[in-house]
Length: 303
Image 1 (cartoon, helix red, strand yellow):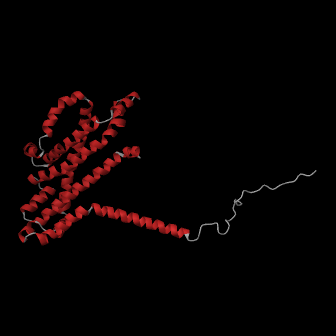
Image 2: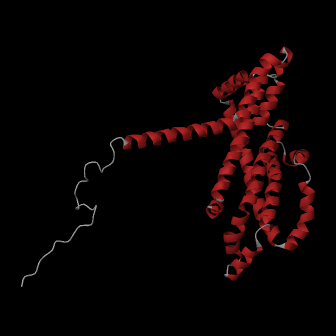
Image 3: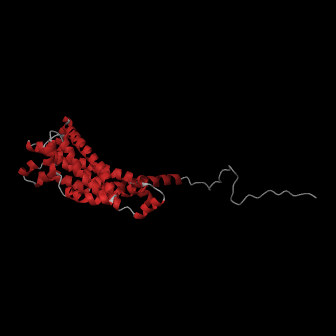
């Protein structure tokens, strides 16, 4: 009796390993080119959409710049044109100031004062705000005093700072710190008070001590509100500093503006004002980027 050996059947449609696909079953010759063309077309459409979106957002600024350029030339009287030069004359004056190094020197002087005063205000405002918000008794004692000074304009105290500290750097840094302190302080208090109590109780039940509780729960939850105050403080520090430099200074953007006005260098005056606007815009963009960096956990949770 003999055994019959049968060869195992290969499943239908399967090919041997390493075998080339049958003719007519591979990728059509024109498909890679079509896919590449579709990818390029999609990238071009996406870039055009982004450019259109940015152009739409910049419509207001472009319209303002166009009005600044053509308004004094065609809409204003010749006497008004002397005090409101067109945009190209202001840009030419800015270029002359940049070539001579004057704009860089004044900008460096203003930045050094504002950064120092702003840094002092942020450190003091956040630290004191955390203490006041965490300890209720301290809040009840300091709140009336803080309300008194918060409602006192910083520029109203400029003569006091000038008399006590002189017209040097100390008075300008102090008034910048004073103006930027209260937005940071009040927003820090509000941010800590709005932390969810359930999160605090849950953290305490897990055994977190006070330093770890501040680090892991309270500060991350209060960061958006704190940065709102920091952005307000950044704007206030620049505005108050410019006003202080107009009163008594030998360098700085405020000094540049008031000196150009008194010397009847009107394009130079507008060049200084334009520099202040660009400086404020840059500071705001920087603070927004820092806020996004320190609030990345909120994006992750939302995702």
